[in-house]
Image (cartoon, rainbow, N blue to C red):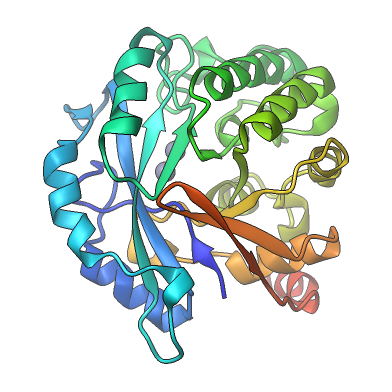
Length: 295
Ligand SMILES: [Zn+2]
Ligand SMILES: [Zn+2]
C-alpha cells in the first residue's frame, strides 16, 4: 500500500520515456496505492539532450491536475491515486525563482534535489566533483544539500541525499553515515525543523546493486543513516522509485519496505496539497535474502 512519491513523464522530463497512461497502467499492475509525477525543473542544466530541463508550469498543471485522485480517499477497487508534483533542482543562483515556483502552483509534493554541484553534473564530469576520498566528496555534497533544505524550507521532500553514491570513481561508492557524521546531523536537524521528509530512493539502490556489485541488502541505504535520523527525532520517510520508464515503476519497493521493516520502520509519508499523510506498510523480510540468492 505504498504511494510512490517521485516519478517522471516523457512529456516533461527529457530523460524519461513513459507517458502518464503507461505509468498509471504499471502502477495498477504492481498494486501501488498511489503514484506522483514529479518532473524535472532544473534551471541551467543543459545536457546531451540539448535542452534546459524545465517545463512550463502552467501547461504542466493544466495537463496533470485534472487527472488527480487523492490516495487518501481511495476506495477498494479504485485505480491507484495520482498526484501532481515537481522535482526542483537546487541552484543557489535562482533561489527566488525556485521559491516562487513552489508557491505559485498547486503542487501536492515538491521534491528538492541536488543534481549539480557548482554547476557540474556528476554523471557527465565525475572527475570534477569526486575527490580522492569519499569523506571529502560527501561532506561537501551534504553541506550543499543542507543549504538547499535551509533555503527552500517549504520543500516537502529532500530527494535522493545519496544521488552522488551512483557515479563515484571508487568501486564501493555508497554514501555512509561515517563518511560525514557532522554534515548528516546538520542536514537532519534542518529537515526535522522544516518538516521535510527523507527520501528513500530505490533508483540509487538499484544502481548500486546492478552497476556496483553490492548485494541487494548492502545496496540499501546505510542503516546508521536511518538510525541517526530517527535518533534526532526524524519521523518522515518517503519511498520513491524515481521511475523514468515503465519497467522502473515501483522498482524494488517491496524489498526496500522489507529492509525498512528490519530497521524498525513501519510507516512512511506522502503529501497531498503539501500536507503530510502517514501510511503504514506490511513487509516480508524474507524478500531481501530470497532476492540475493537469486542474483
Ligand atoms: Zn533527481
Ligand atoms: Zn527524479
